[in-house]
Image (cartoon, rainbow, N blue to C red):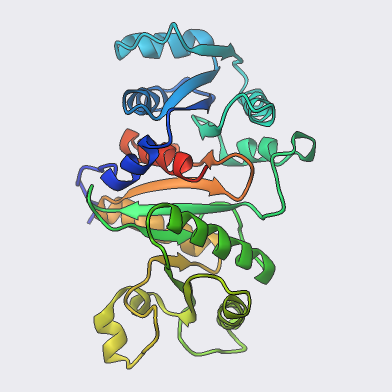
Length: 302
């Protein structure tokens, strides 16, 4: 059942990012082959100018193994994982880099450093994570949010997640995105809190004038399949046409994304938005093409 399809970075995301880059990017705890290789690809695509943080000898050794001369790029030697996150966040706070890219480091360690109040990397928005999903290089993207950062978001947080994702969708050319607020059914049930939130988000999106078609609660099948929606008699602006799937909790989003990666060979570009600096958050198991796509997504989010 697992897919052996080659993961491919989508052309449209790269094309948009190239009109903005290259930008300075800090690679956090960079001493792993996949982190160095994806950085090399991003440099060759003219997306970034890297600043490496990690074990200097290890970074140089890996670069040499892949025949990449990194002598002109800055390397900040720090062999301790936790400290690399602190250094990276400080570089971002001082305006020395425009994006932060996760290397071989735990997400919670990196985000804990980014979220430190004294670094002033958090604005008025709530941070949220976006997965930009594609199967082929010329695919129309499918956005899933939030499947990595906000574990069990309350209603107010979900409104921030909605606004962040709509803003990102516009940046990739979707002028009025269709947003499905995921639940297990289209019925509003007291016994299903996600359906209550979905109904309220739908109302508030209209009241606040968010430039998107927003509807919920919606089950997954009716969000993505016109046929399923038609059979069930579900008629609204997003049924079967969803651009953005706003999930009720991190487990739902993470599970959907991982299923698309491992069962379908999807390219998952992951980025944290809503702060003053986009943060590339990928799985440590992601391949180089997914990491390249994530870097491109972060640049688009600037």
